[in-house]
Image 1 (cartoon, one colour):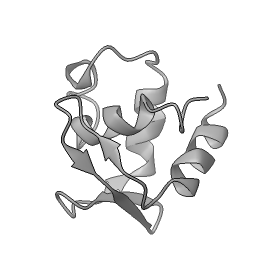
Image 2 (spheres, helix red, strand yellow):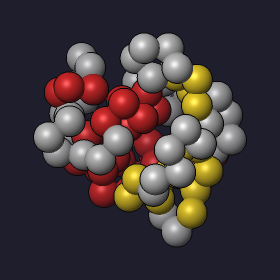
Image 3 (tube, rainbow, N blue to C red):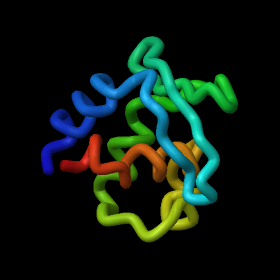
Length: 85
């Protein structure tokens, strides 16, 4: 799947509820091409998602923890059916 399509889905679903692998709910907003989860307020750059998409399908956040910031959130978003359809 093309990354731009995935990113568009991420943009479209801002404010919706997602879950980490441990089932912790979170939402996110988009600020300056960054995903900002409400549980941390730490901006996750678009490039984090670009890197992780190259490894799809993901088996868990540990698979991407050395290459992205906020792996639990990146994993939770990228494994949701609203994002990867």
